[in-house]
Amino acid sequence: MDKPKLKNTLKFFERLGIIKSRSMFGGFGAFCDQATFALVINDCLHI
Image (cartoon, rainbow, N blue to C red; front, side):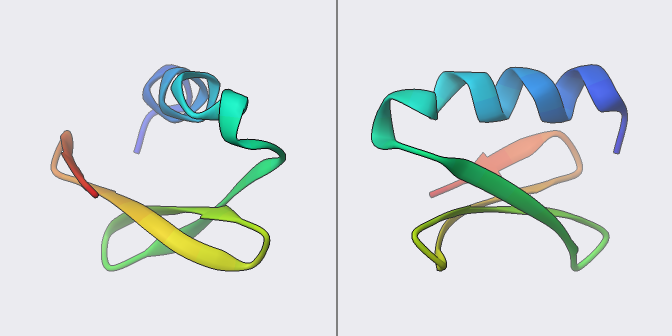
């Protein structure tokens, strides 16, 4: 996953609070308060 794609995705969700990411399933997961709410795999966002 390229860094600009990761940064843009995290910025999109920053209104929810502190958003963290972690590498998952060949893409990355987005977390808020330790709960996974989104996955980005092959440039496709899954909520």
